[in-house]
Image 1 (tube, rainbow, N blue to C red):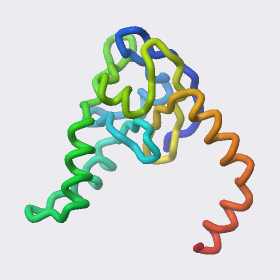
Image 2: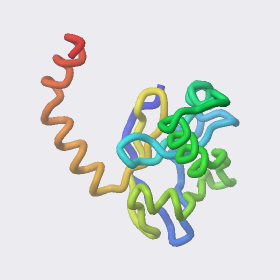
Image 3: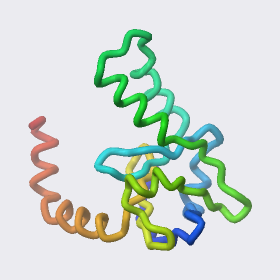
Image 4: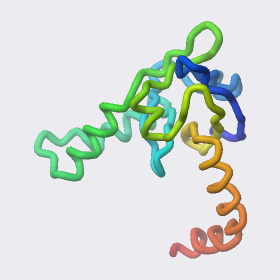
Length: 143
């Protein structure tokens, strides 16, 4: 399970040092791609396989095609360099509004790691924390 929040820099080449706590948990075969809410996500192999399984139909409908094209075209294998850095492609950075250089927030989100543009995370997090009890009540009641 991925937990925690880390503020890190993206350098002018688009390199981002993945926090050691996350690197230790991310096995070979993980992928960096688009996540929900216009953030980037690092998916471990089992979660990536589950996503891919939902997109395997040879006769995909329009939503499946759009999802597959977007997800796969913005994906890269998770291959940190010797200093634990990955390169975020320009297309990935543009989608997530991440500049280079800039600051980002790398968070554990249970089954995956998410990479957020810093100001967007700060705004989202403040709002979500303010609604924590309300959200927990809705989730627990099945609404």
